[in-house]
Image 1 (cartoon, one colour):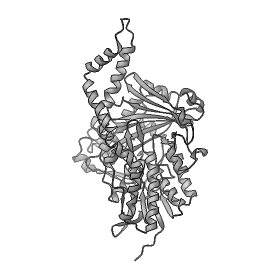
Image 2 (spheres, chains in turn yellow, cyan):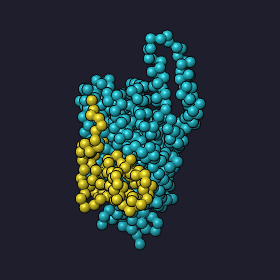
Image 3 (cartoon, chains in turn green, red):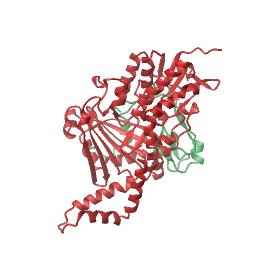
Image 4 (cartoon, chains in turn purple, orange):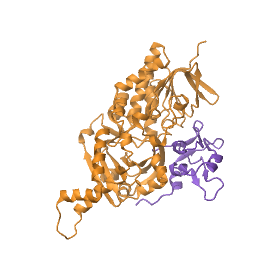
Amino acid sequence: MVENPIKIEEKLALTKYVTDKNFAHITINEEICKTKCKTYDCVYGCPAECYKLVEDGDVPVTFDYAPCVECGTCRLVCPHGSVDWHYPHGGFGVEFKMS
Amino acid sequence: MTVEYDFDVIIVGAGLAGSSAALTLAKEGKEVAIIERGQYPGAKNVSGGALYGPVLNKIVPNYWEEDAIERYLTTKKITLLSEKRAMTIDIDLQDFAEPPYNGVTVIRPKFDRWLAQKAEEAGAFILDNTVAEDFIWKDNQIIGIESGEDELKAKLTIIAEGAVTLLAEKAKLAKKPSPSHYAVGMKETYELKKEIIEERFHLNGNEGISNEFLGYTHGIPGGGFFYTNKETLSFGLILNMKKLIQKKIRAIDAFEDFKKHPYIQKLLKDAKMVEYSAHAIPEGGYKHMPKLYGNGVMIAGDAAGMVLNAGLYIEGMNFALESGRLAGLAAKEALTTNDYSAEGTKIYLKLLRDSFVLQDLKRFKRAAKFLERERIFNVYPELLNSLMYQLLHNTGEPRKRIVPTAIKHFLKKGKLFKLMGDAFAALRSI
């Protein structure tokens, strides 16, 4: 049987990345997240757990661009325009082989 | 002052739409370049993995003679899932076992690389590891793209960037889409021995199956998919973005929950996950497409919102291939008349309207709205499965008649009138 549930980190460990340490292709505006957001839609939408809820944190959500699979969901679900989405620089980011 | 062009046409994105456009233009002897941000064509691309054969055959005749596809599809299954229960419609059509094949399965990083290579062999330049970040404008006309410090100029630009429509928006042809009209698709690829795949799914040689699923998604509109490849399985779940965030269920958790269903577990038994991927999917259909052409520019494929979800038909790749081809033909026409303005590129719209691309999207324009009805996803699969349970379950008591039991079942659940309403809406939309 397939192990259940498989943690997202274990799945993402199978995916190849060429991480650009000098350029975060997505950034969030923490000030907006702090003052305007009450729904944390990015946390529910992201299929790679780049966004995590922080209990009692100053900013309610943390973000890491490294595991991003460049799907484009967060840019669309954030109702406050807090997500600034760019393509990674040429040759960087996720590299699918079997999808 | 005249512009010094580097190419006749620049195409952004070496996916199916982009490479199809490039191949079409290169065959006509045009100077064409594809800008691909990935490490190679296909490295950023995700699909369920099933594609129609006849359209592909039009673009690469006798494609099956090469090592491009995985399996040809002869079996289609549609499964309704609910807790512990599943009901499957199993369609086996051996008519589809002959070239050009009705449907085939593909692995995008491999398939896209192959198609891009076809374009390259025909004379197109492929610039991979290169991201098109913005356009060069002159007198309200797009005359090329910018990549970092570099500029590349072309008489025409075809945007085939895929579902993330950054450039279509910068070209002022699209607005940032609403999550109501998009879905998030998650996919896992599994390795399983060829012999086991063929035995488990009753496949002769290179036959393949597709299995789509309805239900067991926490009521979120969407569904699962499962395709067989040569030695791998493609399995995934697609969920409407807006409904997903409204339900406050993480996409990754909905996917794991879905996978727990015993029917799914049996499909994936002993298979080893080898890759995880995900992508946004435009699902707004005809009513939510961007403007498809402008001054010096055209949009094809997912970037143009050319995906159809009409229940039985869920397709995007064949629209990408055909719209790319038509964008190529339209570009050739505009190059012949030397009119690169919207007047010149307008012919693209005519070609699309004459083809299945816009005709199918238009015919099913109400489907997207219809499929927002949550009952389709959380009530009906369970309603049918529980009816089957009631009819088949032996209690040791005398049997009841079948049809009255069924009517009573629907009435008791209070769904008969809603069912009739939905059936009527289905008639109108799909």
